[in-house]
Picture 1 (cartoon, helix red, strand yellow):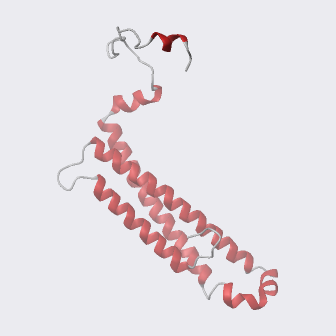
Picture 2: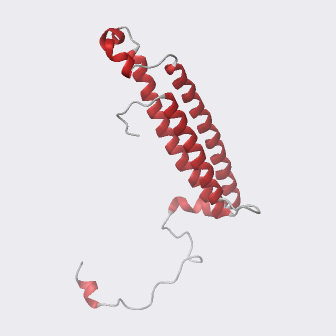
Amino acid sequence: MASGRKRSARDYEQALRRQELAAGRALVQALPAEGSPGTRELAAARRVLTQALFDLRRLARDLDQEIEGLRSRRSPAGPARSGAARPAQGPGPGELDQLEALREAVEEVAQRWEGRRDQLSAELDRRQPRQRQGQRGRGEVKSRRGAAPARPERPRSHRSRRSPG
């Protein structure tokens, strides 16, 4: 939905359900149906959870903004200012409470997903301790044993050596 448009508690609840379903589907696709997952599958599942958490945090920010907007409309200046427009745009009875409860539900889901992602990271670290450490210094070769030999052939074109482009 557009960020400028007011969303109801029901809209946020549906968005949360959609995100949970989407994350579940993506995890089912990333992980094998039978047997234990390999390193690639675990890494794919971690990426799925990372993206799902990103989307969930965006929903939480939108929800926080909606809650703050409702709180500011409830301020002493709010009812006098909005007057006749309140029935069309104002919060329904208990909507702020519903939104706050949904915000707590979003936080619970985020904590659960972060825990799962941390478990995946720990399992990946356990399975590939040397590879995970080597990623810190990408591009540098620690020893010559693992390095590929230099290319012995000449460049394809002499012109490429002389002209920059």
